Length: 311
Image (tube, rainbow, N blue to C red):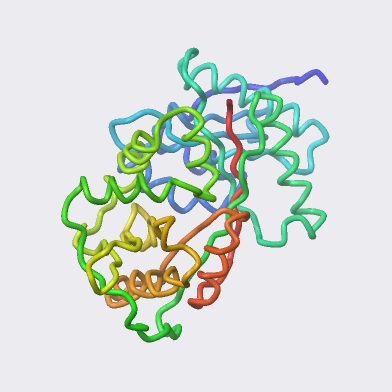
């Protein structure tokens, strides 16, 4: 299909945020703060215009002083007959300008309702965007469940089987992060293990996520048996947007004993006393034990995320 009268370019600056937001998505309220904080840059935010009408947009997110980390905005006019072609052409053009030619492109994430497959309209919106990504060489990677916990939701009382203490130092948490990768159900971790050692995967996860939390590391907890043997850990934290259960895991030799419920409850309690409006958490759709633990603790599955990657 010929794409007539299509102008594709990055936005000129914050003055064009209103233009960029003419196609709505739930991240729009964060864009101004992200630009101010250096998590986004105008040259990472591209628009496709037809006769001054916004018909598609894409944007990447990254950490300050770093390159694009994830593609998290991809929208187009869902009533347009050539919407997929327009979206694909804009993504191709923007990627060529934003992502260095020899780099693996950052993955794509889109937030969707929990029942997106059952709603025909929502399903078409999601699948159209997946088609655009597939044309650019990306493939479906994992679907994740996103949870909220609200203050006042009852938590189980400590069972007394575990003790909790702060993390001693970075080496201790890296050692435990390395050990829990044995038998992990997390798709991103499993993908990392196809390309690097467990230790390197743990270091990468730490440097990409845990090192950037904005909250005290004193909140992190190691769960132990009464004799001091580590059983697992949890890293309650704040990221740039929300209080979160950042990382939670049970060591392989202690799985199957229900310890995850006590560890999750402890992490939730630590955040719950910080006067938070809610606590966010997520896990892979296929990680049924973790998903069930969140539900038992009173977390509500309010959303899912579709993750696609380039290989």
